[in-house]
Image (spheres, rainbow, N blue to C red):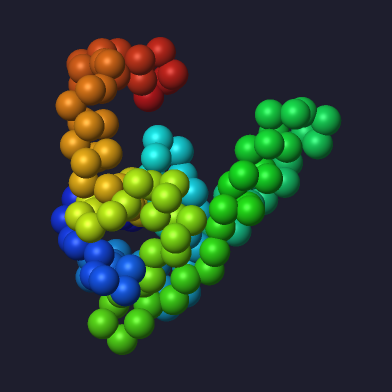
Length: 143
């Protein structure tokens, strides 16, 4: 399980450190894709396979399902850690997540998310619902 929040910088070659607490569970090779809310999603291969199976079950006749699957898979890439525990953030990923220099890496249970520091700060500051309101909504969902 991925938990926690870590701040890092991207070097001049576009490389960033994956927090050591995440590396073992991610493994040497993992999947990075364009995520929701202007961030990147990072999945261990086993979790990616599970998610892929769920996406395969979506109806091909649904325009929204087709669009989501297209965007999700076309925006994905297999990544590998270098010897220092870094990955290179591809230009299309940098553009999608508005990542420039400072990044925040967070654990979100089954995946890791990579955010630009500015986007993460904005997300936290401008959330429309308070934690109490969100908790109430979770009750409505049976959690």
